[in-house]
Image (cartoon, rainbow, N blue to C red; front, side):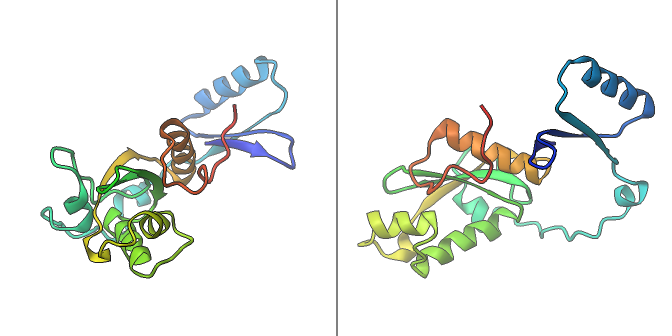
Length: 184
């Protein structure tokens, strides 16, 4: 992962530690690059304990009955047990799109969008779109499709990916251009 460090005034670069030999090689490459404002750090890889023992609960097997599976277009692969992903919602009425990110299971995030529509939450992009463009429709009939655009490795990857995909696709329903300001 990487980012701008305001206190340091340079670029912060964190790489996974693999071996002392590889760390030395990477450090030398950075030092010899001629770029003075890179702060390099190493993050540890997963411990043996974390690889063998998981404290996270797995989602139940849905057998294609959860909300995310039901909303996924026919022919596309459903990843309803995903976490850390960027997704797209597409309005079935007008084909407007929304791109978002979530670290929760897809069916949980979709439920939140449905609840926002039912409660007329005007600070939510999907609910705002429904209320401004399809207010005459019955809320229980409002339909949209869902698909995961990218599975991400960590939180920072998810935020950057969301911003890149919003910039690339320019979805009509997004209120702002993602949570991560992209560098040009």
